[in-house]
Amino acid sequence: MTVQLLSPEGMLQPVPYSHVSVATGSRHVHVAGQIGRDPDTDQMADDLAGQVAQALRNTARGLAGAGATFADVVRLRFFVTQWSPEKMGDFMTGVELVARELGLPQPMPPASLIGVDILFEADVLVELEAYAVLT
Figure 1: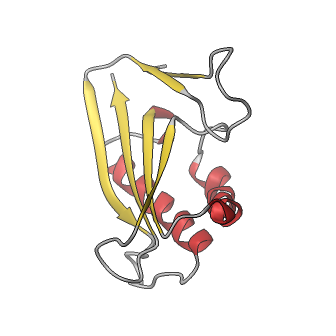
Figure 2 (figure 1 turned 120 degrees about the vertical axis):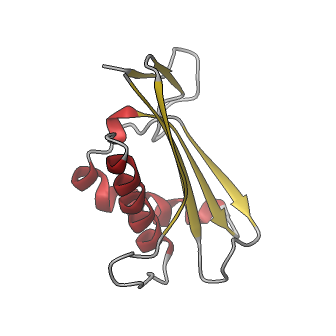
């Protein structure tokens, strides 16, 4: 196993992600700028949950292209437009929709959720970056 996920004692609990990842390996995979647009249909959900789910699917495709899976991910970074704490339920619904399908570790790898005013297109609600390490 190249990635160990943990949340040491004394860190805020429970959270839907691990606080720390430890990775060994020499191949670093960076997947950037994945949004909620389905590349097969060019369609995009108009809700946060749907866009989070598709952004995770798109990220899985990027990882697979490099020979990686979510098991190799050491960090996720989400950018969400017009963020407010009331959106957490919709955000987590999107994660839960695809967690089993994509083999997303539970809890997830260390993750940041960053609120932004706007992304590069007005209808994009979420953008996702992933970092993985392979042997």
